[in-house]
Image (cartoon, rainbow, N blue to C red; front, top):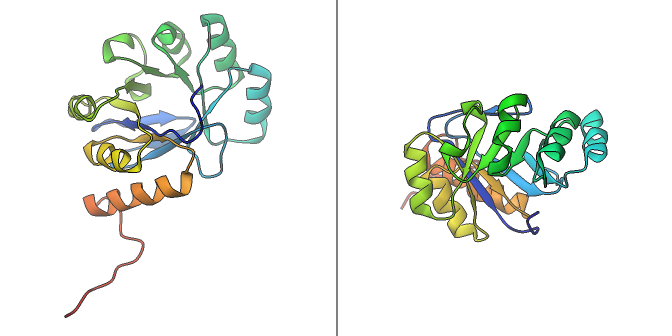
Length: 190
């Protein structure tokens, strides 16, 4: 489990990411938080199947991510409603169940549906290289400036304790890239 306030960014290159019935297309960003926070797209929660079931019974969104300790726990969490399994060891579970997988390298996700693979990378070089290869990338960066750099390089999912601040940075990057209209357009005249 990560500490609140960390940001994780996922890059998908040209590929779509499918989680919990939602599709993140090219140029779209997702925010991932440690726990369920208003405005989040993906919530990293404890691998507690009864708690996941209770949450999923009342909420269609956000997508639920878990970092289970064993394959049996991963299966139980997926059956309870978890959408994203965190860890290389759970590729067989994700492949068998259709869950998404966050792993350390694309070759660790054998059998997992391509639209459900997030690859964890810690530096901008890896983010750029993996995004250019067309895979989803997940990085852990606590600094807003690095978040902006990763977003510019193609990162798509961000684990954060500051949903509002992160959304502002991501909206700014999307506006600069031309994938979304600016919130306010002003024309400066001399």
